[in-house]
Image (cartoon, rainbow, N blue to C red):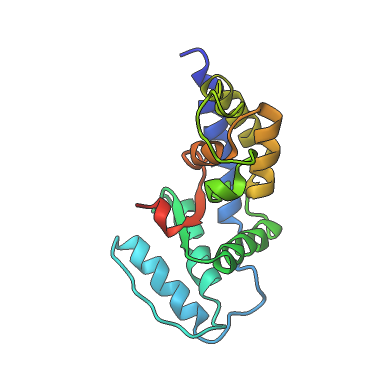
Length: 196
């Protein structure tokens, strides 16, 4: 129990800062694109009413921001606990990361984690996840708590580069580290298969 209070206190403080920043967060663009405000309103209502929303919209309407901005606002109002932004391609992952970066530039303080595929983020030449084959797997659970506490106290955007930097610093598997960080994140950006 003695090791848990610093983590719990950090989570509470991060949530307080997040909610304050969300309340003050303006839409990150000067104007809405045609159809964008309507989509954003539909997303917010779907979250508020706890119902599913299926939307088909043309390229260029601003779907990413139209879904993320109202979802972020819903977190700030206690209507949503966590956002999962699921992608099928790198370009959509990048769009989500850029949307969060735009909101962060407007004052958002929300912790986001991007989960990168194990074979892409592994530090070893061959992806063998056994403690006898990988120094980042050997003793992982002895080091991961310190690594998580360090990263969550310093970072809000935890993309591949940030995950890798802290994983090397604490000698932990970057893939498993990103999964563990996702438990504490306000938003998780990942491939569809991780939801399954």
